[in-house]
Amino acid sequence: MHVSAPMGDFTLDRKKTMPVVLMSGGVGVTPMTSMLSTLLADASERSVTFVHACRNSRVHAFREWLNDTVASHPNMKRVVFYEAVDAGDRKGIDYDFEGRLDVAQIADQVIVPDADYYICGPVPFMRAQRDGLTALGVDAARIHTEVFGSGAVE
Image 1 (cartoon, rainbow, N blue to C red):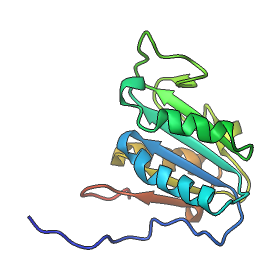
Image 2: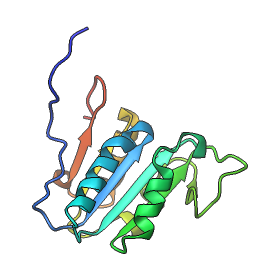
Image 3: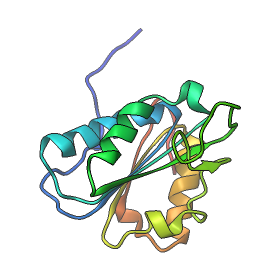
Image 4: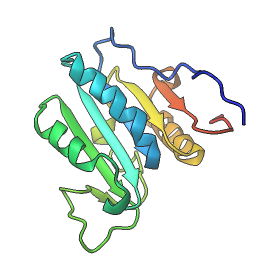
């Protein structure tokens, strides 16, 4: 096994003041929570929309942390999609929409003027979100993605 230092340019520019939309699928939530934690540590007043998609509450990492964070910061909101809602999953508390993440369905919440978009998750997920955002008029230069593993989003 070969190991290398972290590479890539998937970093949050802490000097910017424009809104941020963080979009994750599955374990892609991990760098998004790191970015959000950085904004919190900086006491940033940037508007943040945190969009996450996963199977259901059994695999929804950071659920309580995200809910608590959004509840205590008026400049932040969250949108959560569960692909396969469980009987105990609570709409409006655990998740907001059932099914796969569809940016056209939530365009009023994610299309934010001058926002930077950060997307992390499986390659097909990232491709779908990037394509959905550009179809809604988001400049591709404002969309940043991170691949965990091999392959590219192109």
